[in-house]
Amino acid sequence: MDVNEIIGKILNDKRITPEEGLYFLKEADTSRMGALADSKKRKFHPEGIVTFVADTNPNYTNVCDTECLFCAFWRPPGASDAYALSIDKVIEIMRTSYHNGATTVLLQGGHNPEIGLEYYIELVRRAREEIPDLHLHLFSAPEISAIAKYSGISTQDVLKQLWDAGLRTIPGGGAEVLSNRVRKKISPLKINADEWMKVTREAHMQGFKTTATMMFGHFEEDEDIVEHLERIRALQDETGNFLAFIPWTFKPKNTFLERKLPNEVGGDRYLRVLAISRIYLDNFAHIQGSWFTQGNKVGSLSMHYGASDLGGTLFDENVLTCAENKYKSSLEELVHMIRSAGFKPAQRNTYYEVINRF
Image 1 (spheres, helix red, strand yellow):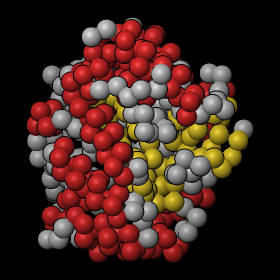
Image 2 (cartoon, one colour):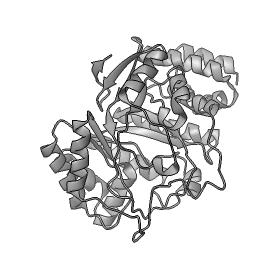
Image 3 (tube, one colour):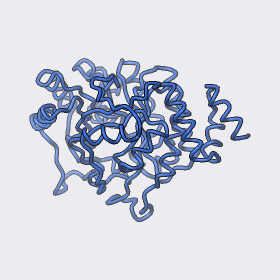
Image 4 (cartoon, helix red, strand yellow):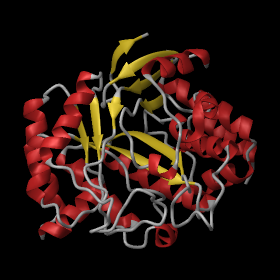
């Protein structure tokens, strides 16, 4: 196998195989990967626009019985700082964020066995009725699986009831790395890679649009990265209902993995994974860069390594804040970041439709 042969395939818009993707990730020069990813991005977005969304990411509970080793947010039932918000309180947070400019609320929480299905259904219905112009982007595949388990029904039934209540898009959280070898090390009590794929496929078949994510920089090898990309590329071939792919890096502070993995992954590794994601996922229109975990400098570089979107303003974020992630950004700062990198900033909605240009 030869890097130049793989480059030739990429330049000719031919799909690369998992074997070629792995070889390229291992052997290619970082700057060349970036140039190829940028070229691929420009075929999807020739106008040079980079988007972002005005959103908020509150959490309705931090109680979780899945106990992921990479997460600093969860608390066991009965902990002194454990909480579960009432529906009224969640609606209040949503309404405040909407009045502050948010167009989307990305709501996730711990897997709390004390919260029943009726909570989730009523929350969706009330939010749709009381804040109809705020888009609801709620409940990842592991949450849906946990709700089904606690309720004694199938994940398909949970998805149908959420659909009937008015939910239309689902965040791609809880994927971490879609390799069962890795998941056994970082989240042994969580649904495995096959179950994540199953719930996401069911969501797509119900009609939901979803995102796909990857949280890397811990125990994964290059082989696991490519397995993850191959799984979601194949599902996108089947359903076409992924809106975007969102890779970000593990933050070790205050987690059970901090002693084993005290150092965060560097910018070079992040940009290489971002670039191979843009190159490999030839059926995804949008790849998101992560200023939120990498900072503004690497966030700016991400736009030259395949990112056509910078995610959200995250008015309210708690999970990575618990891991002492300090990065924050306003709408004005994101506009400046995009413009300074040589691109045209635009605000989008959850469906990646442009709603405002700057």
